[in-house]
Amino acid sequence: MTTTEMRLATEAAEPRRVPGQPDMWVFVLVEALIFTSYFCVYLFSRTQHEQAFLQSQSHLILWLGVLDTIVLLTSSWSVARCVQHSRAGRYREAKHAALLTTGLGLLFLVQKIFEWTALIHRGHTFTSSEFFQHFFFLTGMHCLHLLIGFFVLGLLYLQLADPRKRSQETVETCATYWHTVDFLWVLIFALLYVVR
Amino acid sequence: MKGVFDKRRLIAWLLLVAITLLYPLIDHAADKNGTLTASTFLTVAAICLACVKLRVIFREFMEVRSAPALLCRITDLWVVLIASVLIATYLAGRAVA
Amino acid sequence: MTLTDWWDSPKRELWFVWYATIVFYSLYGFVFFVVTRTQPPGKPWLNPDEVVNWFAGRHDGLLIGFGLIFSLGGLSATAIALITYSIRRMSVSRAYAYSYLLLYGVSAVPGFLFICVAMTAGAMRPDRDPALQQWLYDLGFLSFAGTMGVFFIGSLIWMAAVLLDTNGVFPKWFGYLNLCNALTEVVTGAAWIFDRGAFAWNGAIVWWIDVAVWVPYTVVFIHLLRQVILRDDFGTGRLPELPPTEPVRRAREEALVP
Image (cartoon, rainbow over all chains, first blue to last red; front, side, top):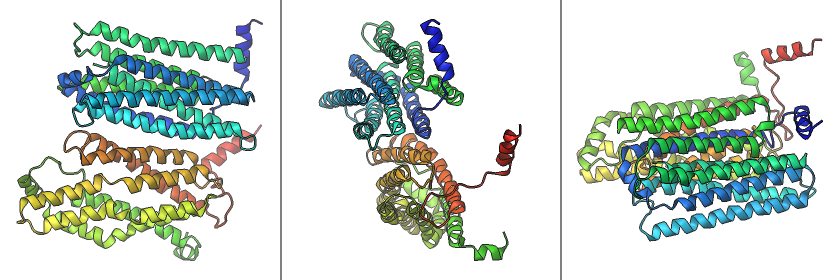
């Protein structure tokens, strides 16, 4: 058998399962819908005040947004690796991956605070324009999810650190939450930084 | 098998980063002389690219690929729903503006 | 079930409280949306004379509707009591139940009392100084839309209890739904800053999306509370599951036939 045939055979043989608690997916899907409704309000407002929104948006730095996105995508990659290691019983590597994820999350937070501070110094605040109302609201709400994400990552780390408490289901559920933080940002970035 | 999963995940990450780097490219292509202008093409492209990334994250990072078919279909439906609703809102907004 | 069976049932009080919960939420919706027409909320940007007209157009509805709420508003305690009871039934510390009860014990104040008092005061003397009428209007709507702190923390406590519970009182997805609901309530504070747009007290984000999430959430928890009562065995261990419904039972039997 070739490597590809072996891989396909293994995949076919493994029973399909939802990683972590299936219930967490209710949160993932409902939260995606709620954010989509916030995005719709933003997009509609945008179309009604096109020039004003474009004018405000020009103060954002696209590359900062790109960097933020790459940082979070990498953190998603590292938490997925963490789950793989944990599943295979490689807890030391899993803990390293979890720490990397947390570090990247913190980097994202620092970048965001830096960006907000810079914008506020230049007079762009929550109340200065309609675009920035939505900007600070969406990035702020996302940040709240990120902060909850740190708590969730802490829970994940505890699972890995203590052999008595270890629950693979909890590890995977925590990872699913973190991926949600990532994909919400993917959407927010596209809508705030790129969309015209 | 570990190597196979790792490689697949790494490719997924590379793809996601590549799509992210596409944004500044299409962004510059749409702007005239450095001033921002409204662009339906850019908006629709940005939303579609974001939803492609969303699907990759669902399938590769969140392991929906190896999840029961129901979850595969629901997440695909969600991606299509989000893209459609966002694009429809934008187009409807432009129509009534 | 005959009336005597129902009367003798040990779950009699639980059922009474559950039906009272339905009555309260129905009354709440009917009074706010139909009788008083205070929801969806009035526009924050009305000037004092427009506010006077707003009160005039709703004069009788405000006095009758909120009069009903003042008389029967105590029914709001039924849902709180039932939820507290269900948290007590969980395997988690009783502190969760008591925190929830204490928090929600004051929830009626921002939940409806403030707006009822402000609006009935406004309706009572139509010839009052328009600036004062506007003040009452602002107080009513701001206190209603912008004070979600109690509900936000309460949702988080309930969420934590559900996720940590090993007695299976509520399904875990409901715990996560509590988080979704709580997060929509965080945004309402923006109503204190904006008097128009998506973040005003009548805005798309502060009101419409918030309500669009809260209504299904309420329907879901009322249904789950019913399930808890049906399953309750007055014990302290894992709550037994309900027997399968007839179609499910038949399907399972058919699956076993060779």
